[in-house]
Length: 42
Image (cartoon, rainbow, N blue to C red; front, side, top):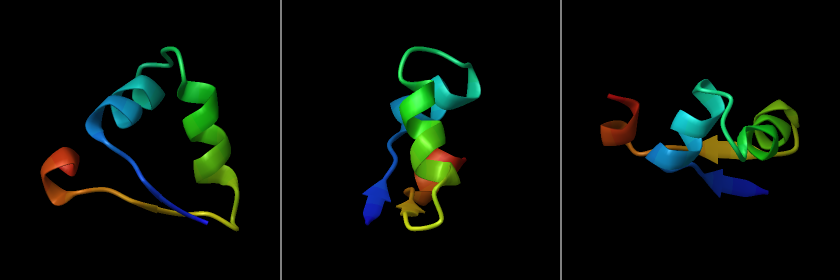
């Protein structure tokens, strides 16, 4: 499945905030593909 991560999801993951476990599960599953806009990565 494909996912698009927005800035709030990435920040929550990096800061171990609420929802970080969900993002972690998506990122670590090889069946999933994650995308992010270049502006969010900056």
